[in-house]
Length: 79
Image 1 (cartoon, one colour):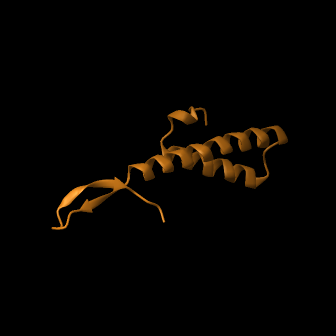
Image 2 (cartoon, rainbow, N blue to C red):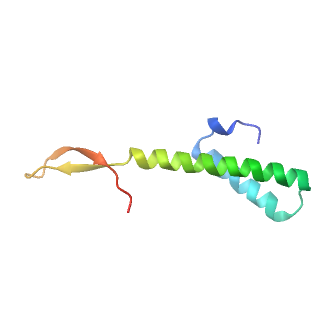
Image 3 (cartoon, one colour):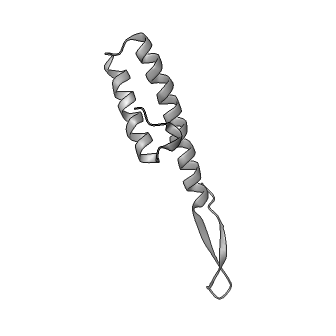
């Protein structure tokens, strides 16, 4: 749990977030440890959200011209 969150890939951050949630749900952590876990979990959650937003921005839809040939790309529009 010591790796800087900013350097984590999505999968790493999600895995650690799951561990943090599990630890918090177990009720075995002291109050101070629970607060620290919650704070790190919040930062991990934000990191995962940022990575998902970046991935979505990279998804592109191919536009076709009147003859069905690729004519360029347009940004993905989430429904």
